[in-house]
Image (cartoon, rainbow, N blue to C red; front, side, top):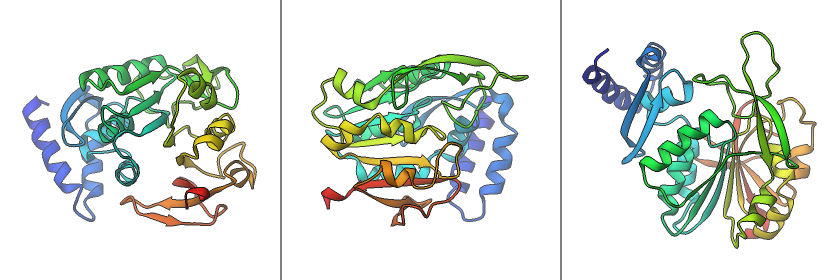
Length: 279
């Protein structure tokens, strides 16, 4: 497919994405576009540049729909202010990192954590393309304690999560990645503020928060988490234990913030934790 038809088709799908009931049409186009390779857009989030590999589900959704994590973006529109500091954990190639850096501005900072080397290179390229000096890239995953982990490292394919556990198996590629803790990074950079933490770790969110105990006590940041009690290794009540002192909310598709019981969440939801002491 030539470049011009691709661009024209994208303009159409971005408009269709705002029409109720048009999602299946755009999704059908997206699924047929995997052979188009890497496409660069210059209007991501309005005016940002991003290289998108259409073989990857997340990237192709951004290309054809405008965003992969639209609800998260809309929520960040309400939460982020110039000068604030955000940890974007599980940054992948930078969708939320770029959005957040634009909103906190040069006076703020975004710490983007991405452990896989191949994905981290894409993150670095997208950050550099937009000259976002307020972004600090951390080439590590996050856990309860520092260390290493074997992860699924299938290059060029969306695998669900940056730190999905690799099990070897036929057709699997694995890589060893470094792990750090949120508290360790706060100490290393001698941070004086941490306004928010966004976690997208496909089931590793609770261990990551356990490694943030000191930061949560000191800064009381808001927490934006893709997490579910149905995920392996999470026992009932663990989320309530880790997020003691936080009020939980559900984030709707349009970014609406709705209070919920801390045990009442579904298979895949975006949760917002607001520290009770902030009122």
